[in-house]
Image (cartoon, rainbow, N blue to C red):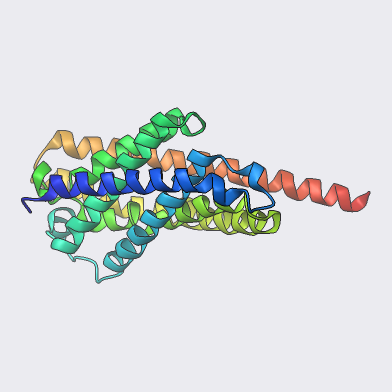
Amino acid sequence: MEHELPALALRVGFLCGAHAVIELVLPGAALRLPEASAFHTASTANDLVSSAALTWITITGAGLYFNPAPETVADRLYGDGGEDYYSFYISMAAAELYGMIMSLRVPILRKPEMLVHHGMTCALCLTGLRSFGGPFLHYHGTFFMGTAQVTSVLLGLASVAKGLHPRWEGRSKIAFGLSFIFVRCLWWPVESYGFWQDLIGLMRSGKQHSTLCVVLFAVANVFLTSLQFLWGRKIATTALSLLSGSKRSQCH
């Protein structure tokens, strides 16, 4: 695909343009809402754009992931999934580049772990493109970079709901928390186990295209999996404190 890099730049430009339009329009729209003070314009614009982009990525990734899995290690790691996979990887790389730009631009989003997360995920996506030596990890990527993004969609919607109505905020946070625990803390490790089995099998066969690349992906998986557990712990701790506070208020 000779137009991969222009397509990547076009997608990033489109997301940034959509963000700019929403950021201009949002203050006027927020004045009509009772909870307008809860909006942070740049952050809310980011939530809306990211949620829209990641919804498409989640649906596309899940559709590719739930196709019959390749039977061999070589096919799961190096199989060329075709143009649908390349479009998926370009779109996800664009979403992560957009996320990195917004994290650098908007102070409230400027968190070190998120900058590392965006940068690392973008780098992993790029390796799936022919322009960067792909295909590599087309099958496994459809879960980690596609299906699992459903939690990011719900997180963005929960942030937007915060400025709309308190009841919507509570329900959306519950949906996000439950999805995160199931997808990121339970399902993700199972997929990581299969991913590691394939990487170890590849290394034992001696047929890896680059030992350094395989090691970097293994390290990235450990880092990203650790982040899932760290965030999952924060979510569980917050949920437990809210439940205990609710019980105490009922007792009084």
